[in-house]
Image 1 (cartoon, rainbow, N blue to C red):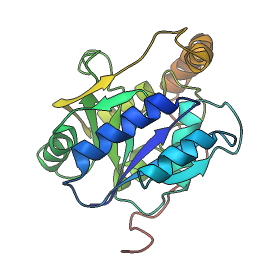
Image 2 (cartoon, helix red, strand yellow):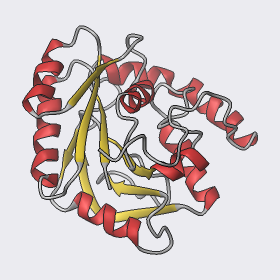
Image 3 (spheres, helix red, strand yellow):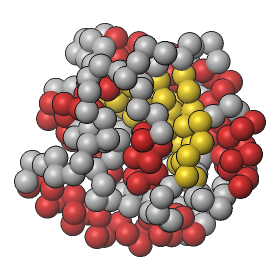
Image 4 (cartoon, rainbow, N blue to C red):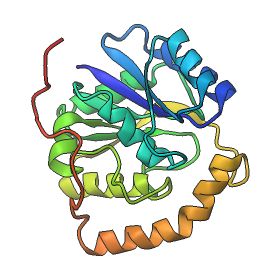
Length: 232
């Protein structure tokens, strides 16, 4: 299985370095795990850090559009993968997290296909939603509209829609022992957090409307083919 860790970053060199360092440390023993960075066009520090960790690097076509947009942008740069994970520049990965995700994915009820949420050490996904997660290629195409994030959100409620789509499809699982530290610094931790916080109320209204309408796939898919483009 080829896995792409899609990682938006927004002028946070220290956070990105910490995230990628812990990511490499915790996944180096697993074959075919690639990091894909989506950054702002003028974020030269992010480009240098991506090079240091041998990550695929892409820039966001439109500026300051939030992590949902950036996850999709990263996916566009990594079309040939079996599974995708919503990484971030404010996550510190803990040993064994991906091993546990893959174990849960392989077992019932998913049996290798679906959505696996991880434990961000902040919220119980069973009561709320999984804030970061791995989705398999077939699940994304069949149940998430062929995208990493429904393109109607800035940040908040992106996870909720993906989580609820998975539950509705009977393709949801939580890898409670797959632990990471989500180093979120509050709504005013920096300008990116503030922009997300200010968009939260509007995003909730979007989510509630889309929930009522059954989460329609009213957007263009990024990946369409169940089979990968190549085996390379």
